[in-house]
Image (cartoon, rainbow, N blue to C red):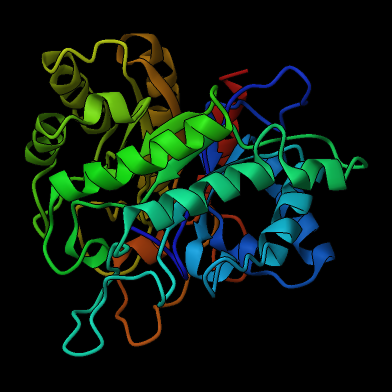
Amino acid sequence: MVTGVAASALTIGLTDVRAAGPPFLGLVSEDAFALTTPADRDATLARISSAGAGTLRQTLDWSIAEPTRGHFDWSLYDAWMTSTAKAHLHVLPILFNPPAWASSKPKRNAKRGTYPPRRNSDFARFAAAAVGRYGPTGAFWSEHPELPKVPVRAWQVWNEPNLPAYWQPKLSARKYVALLRAASKAIKKADRRATVVTGGLPQSRLGIPLATYVRQMYAAGARSAFDALAVNPYARTPGGVLGFLRRVRREMDRHHDRNGKLWATEIGWSDRGPKGAFRLGAKGQASAIRRTIPALWHARRSLKLQGVIYFNWRDAPPYPGGKDFWGLHTGLLRMDGTPKPAYDAFKAAAQRLR
């Protein structure tokens, strides 16, 4: 699931940075990214920090960063990194969405959705450039010595590649692994200590089933191409989320990846909106958050779980041309910015992790 251009953030604890909240716990906040004035963005990020999040997952859109081949424009993301650094928030970028010049999307009869790049080498070069900008020795930090240094140390490669909306025209774990391997090699060359995170994999009837896709990834040689396998373990109950992650952990162990890390890059429930398995009402949403986050914290060692990202900070309107659905109502805040019971539940859960 993504919002706007897409969604994104992961974190690593760094000794030279005062974390805003537990590095284990993060949020998606596309609305904060979309704010155009630094003052409004800073105020929103300060509120996110006070709620207890230590990370933000945000798309780093290739089509924006390199609109023409070889010509990078980092201005939008420089502004974002300036605000997140001042708030002492870590960022997990999702490297995603090729510009037109790099996309495999045909000029005619294209399907709706995102196409992978024509050449994985172009994507790898983009990934290396992003590390060179925002990684530990990135140019952004040398250009802004006045900021708290909060470099990106983990990079998520793509979003939900087992769904047709994000991998057209035909799903292929083998082709995704080839992209992942190229990006991983480039990222590690730029920062050998970086963590490479796979695209978050959901369970959905719309694409390749999660377990099948994970097996296909390992069969294609993915184990050497990533450090952390990311999943989006949406489930109705805390037990359902834990069960989802335990099944993935067993699958990883079965493929001799016992040292591989795990990330939950999206969890969430709605309070209202269209009916569905994840619409729990205001009290149910708050209860699920209050119970699930500590449960995942306590299970983190057995799962080798590195972190959890809640989707979403604030409710959103339907996408242009789209319909209302439960994922637009998972916010801790309503669209007018007023807090739901979920906000207090998230804050209380975060305090239990300190």
